[in-house]
Length: 256
Image (cartoon, rainbow, N blue to C red; front, side):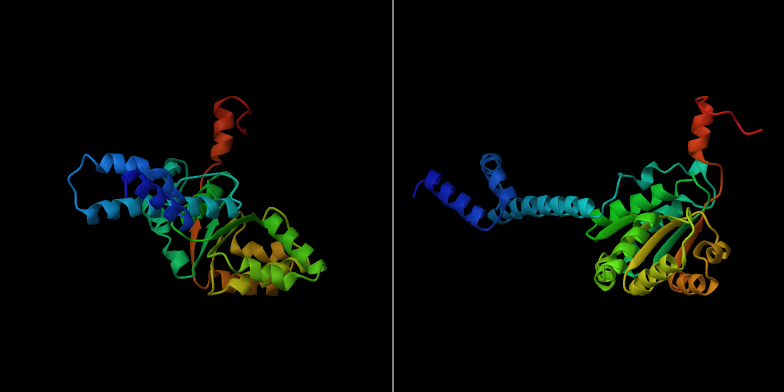
């Protein structure tokens, strides 16, 4: 059998096995290997390593798309000089994603403009790259989805759906008060993931203010009890970096 026929058969087999990356790489690979003095085992190892790497990258890209993360961020880009309450050691520990492995939670607390959402987005992105499923919503989006599901008699299905991702990211808790129905739904969501999946949240409210935020001290206490039982709390302090930039470029006048 000629080499050309053998190659055609190999390509057909790769196509049947759904190895699209190898199919597109095989000609280049064989050309490179022709000039190398290597064992068959080494060559096969490199060949399939290419397929595995490409599949992982494609899977990570899919997970990132399904996470609904609105923007890409990196912990390496986080400016520690602009904020107090967090160190490079903290960021390095978070980037290991051990909290996801252990179903722990992370709470990022502090005023607006300190980079809480940056850290949250970076961790969601890192989780997707490392093989974890993740899902991002703002608190407002979450509440709207839960209320809609309840009114359409599919709340149980919605809570089940939100319990599946290994990491659930809820951004901007505290920017609008919740009514009794909304507070009860937020509690149900947190309770449904308790010790089953990780939650990372950003909030501009202290825990003492959650009673007012949720309009019910009992529900707020029950929600925080489950959220904080296995959680790392990071309290960021400082001035808004967004406001600093606007002042720097003369877009607003400094507050007197």
